[in-house]
Amino acid sequence: MQMPAPDAKVIARSGELAAALRGVLPAESVHDAEAARRAYQSDGLTAYSQLPLLVALPETTAQVADILKVCAVFGAKVVPRGAGTSLSGGALPLADGVLLGMAKFNRILEIDYENRCVVAQPGVTNLAVTQAVQGHGFCYAPDPSSQVACTLGGNVAENAGGVHCLKYGLTTNNLLGLELVLMSGEVLRLGGRHLDSAGYDLLGIITGSEGLLGVITEVTLRILPQPQTVRALLIGFATIEQAGDCVAGVIAAGIIPGGMELMDRPAIHAAEAFTGAGYPLDAAAILIVELDGPEVEAEHLANRVAEIARDLGATMVRASADESERLRFWAGRKAAFPAVGRISPDYYCMDGTIPRARLADVLGKIAEMSEHFGLRVANVFHAGDGNLHPLILYDANNPGELERAEEFGAEILRLCVAVGGVLTGEHGVGVEKRDLMGEMFDDIDLAHQQRLKCAFDPDGALNPGKVFPVLHRCAELGRVHVHRGRHLFPDLPRF
Ligand SMILES: Cc1cc2nc3c(=O)[nH]c(=O)nc-3n(C[C@H](O)[C@H](O)[C@H](O)COP(=O)(O)OP(=O)(O)OC[C@H]3O[C@@H](n4cnc5c(N)ncnc54)[C@H](O)[C@@H]3O)c2cc1C
Image (tube, rainbow, N blue to C red):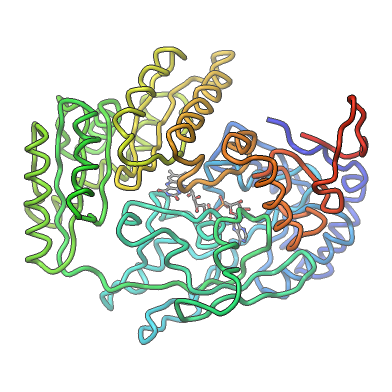
């Protein structure tokens, strides 16, 4: 994986840049010492790391605007960062860039029950929103498994999802408004406390923009009443194909569960050993299906799902008898990633989405690839959304294994695209899937996406090296022509 070549001129002026940043921030909010910078060298994609040139920790929108203006003057790049849980390397720092840590933006500004929304700063954790409103019977629906740590800014930038997004939507469906600072220092306010706005859907463009268009400094989120009743079913199958067919069968029957998650045998065993959730160890796959709503409806739907599962040959169907059993069913799923971390020195978490009807087929092919690459895989994923998370198990200490795991992962993503799916479901493109963008988009698509980037950030200073496989300077975009190996702009860095 190659990043843009660092700009030696910017690195040479790091002392001056630090002094200029200390001119707009309290001195203790700018870090240039190596020990302090090291805390930011990586995100959830730990295979890659890089010390940032400097770290800036603002706490007001005006400070963010000032930092960006200073960086623009110095030609320094900027990488925004929330909690650093990105699994695609979106918050990976740059050797010639300022790491903009948003952790001090950690306040919920307003809870507006009348308009059913929460206004919060981007450094607030995802879980803190539900915790703040649950006493009044409300919740914030998107619930990534990392919700105890990940921040709202990171959630918007990655369009994060979670178990309950099948029924209640991803971040994009639960975001009403935001404040954004552009590289020029301009402050935009998009959306509001209502569901739609006039004009282009700029809120939609910013959601999932992976820190490439602007820095989010405030969000307004939709909150929902908590469902009256929640029932969960734990269903075991002798084959993974049956579990895949059950997912398709439930949706085809017109039922949209609150969540529908699939785990295969390696994941079941790892989670059971870690949490004792009560999973059947003889099953090749389990589904956890959650039904919610008024009691009669949740009961009726749970019975329908159980019927569908039995008709497809389920070896076990258990309905949660009470809330503590429901939480136990989920405990294994929620802790599945760390559980897999106990059975392998390293794992590589993939994220691709496929049409639900292809689940069984694609899982079969992943099993074949696992044989081919000689690396084990555990599957834990949002089956209802067709959002796969194969965890490729490897040992980075063995020479060549990381590269083999990456090639295996790339093959899985190519397969997702080939069956009509997409490269990412919720973890973003970042650096991880950057070089695979060409599998999904042709040059014209990519050029249009980059033109949009140029409209917000004409100098390409925000989070470069992420998402787009080829760096274009906005002025040359679409006009670069290589003739007989002679490049029109030989000075442009390409990676
Ligand atoms: C164990 C584990 C489980 C996970 N489970 C899920 C899951 O179920 N669903 C899911 O969707 N994801 C999941 N993730 C991935 C990750 O938690 C999400 O992508 C999350 O949204 C990242 O938030 P963060 O605050 O950590 O952002 P960071 O990792 O700090 O940054 C992510 C991206 O957002 C940008 N960014 C951050 N803050 C801002 C800002 N204020 N303005 C502009 N850009 C910004 C960064 O530049 C970067 O591109 C999981 C990760 C882990 C480690």
